[in-house]
Length: 163
Image (cartoon, rainbow, N blue to C red; front, top):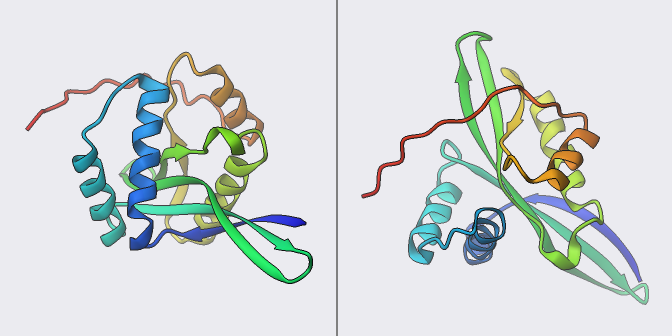
């Protein structure tokens, strides 16, 4: 069996899987239980409007006995944009990264990252990629550093409004 990773833009039919992965990521990284209906609606809104978000899905494709090709989703990330008046361009933010346990440490995130990095380099007006990571998530921080990312030196503050 020959297996390869392919990155594709997410489609509306991916909504439930992306929502499931977002729920799992929130629990694993922050021990937060999110409202499933809200997350599903949020993913659906992002999929419908590239101005809100762009989702990418890593697919592991395998050819069985030289004939049939099967494809399995093995990870995702979401991009959002932030305008920088300092640099007169867009930062692309990597968010909602998730790779299921069975597919971790196999280059899935690296493939997703390299894909969006190349898209960013090829897109006029994009000045770089950013992401945020939990302060104690050393494994993720090492992964990001291994891909050439560096600590930007910021701390994040927020005011959250519940509706």
